Length: 624
Image (cartoon, rainbow, N blue to C red):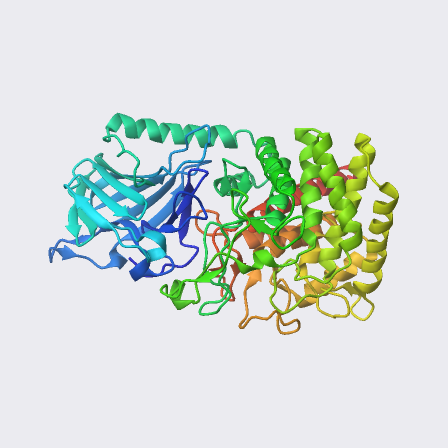
């Protein structure tokens, strides 16, 4: 196995409370329990030696030597079972074809639990294949020791407050390797074996013995769950398979007990190899989650949108964040606002990209845009979950009253820069959204509110953005007042209704972005050299922005350019349709993986492009 496979060489499995990454070589090298934001059980992705991993790989025996052949003699392929989160890793050897089928059972109703299972089924479909198993857990990001008990068919790893049970079914004999276990097994065509890892609290009962019937039932149940779920998707456009995969990915990264989506499944993966831009994204950003709600609603997933609305209403009921603002920019999946940032100095990082950070210090930042995104989410979900109740409306109205006095402040902005507060145009844009949607909701549903004051604030923001956020010299909207720097976050301007998608000012801004931020249809967030962000190094193009660029082109009537950009962007997806945060100079995926922002914007772009292409075809038909 490679010590550090490329970030993109992974598939994602999960049970809607936590998740795991499995490399295309069959190595599970990232898994936290009991939640997405809990300490890791396997973190080999961030430190192969200290982080731990759970590998099931295939050997290719050399008939002439009787010794294992080189890795080059095994060809790996990976795919999802269609419209599911069941991951299949295939091994093509000289003597046969083997597969490992990975999934995590999804049991409902989704009450929070500390008990999670990873099921790994080994099977051979042609010839014979020899598999090698290694299970090397390293609890608490590799900081906590563990004890091992093994009897050949089961192994128990006891860490502080947590236990991992490893069970095998079939001709697999576990051998101890200090405090870890390993095994080899050769299977012939049609033969199967199973390995199940159950992670739970130290005082929890051991899992029941495995059986063939039980494994079959679990497999059928998880397939049925995902097929039933994606069957509710209303999208029937040109990119159905791609959109379905993005929807499943967003679902996998949503904590079902509270309805809170996380920003990404991982922490510490670099935006630049060897650089310091390595953050922990396993939390719920108000911004990301609110935009994800729009994407899920557009696909017909009303239940998920309603669940997040409940989570967001709870945050407003909590009565304020520790920094004194009504909302914090991010929370843990259960709503806990405490996300102290800590450097895990013992971990070397993916390909020596240190520091590895746990927690996120940006939680204390001031980012005024989140209020627009919060009201945006409440307004969107109102279409399916009903009008806010009186008490919840009063809290929303109080938020807008507060925003009337506070919107005109410098902040850290959407990209969470650490270079000081500025008057970011995007932040003012989203404050405008908060007032605009608040006014619309009050009028549509006859709710009480200080409409004259909200209207005055909304109009003042628009006038300010149109004057101070617009650069006559650049003929474009700029990142922050008094700056010539462009910023791709402003691609959201037409989506939220601030400006018409064919307004001359917007088309001019789009042209400026084309010249400066776009590289072969890939879009940079901004130029750190022109607008220092307080961090060393550079970064790749930001995939969220690349898909928002497609959306903006489609809405602007530049349909052929939009389709070309979209089709090219899809070529940067990994082998199973997943995207990380960024794309590097040579096309490699960088940053935390997979990233919800990217997948929700893919959905947004696909729907807008479908609509634009349909309209173009309809117009052409009318002319003929």
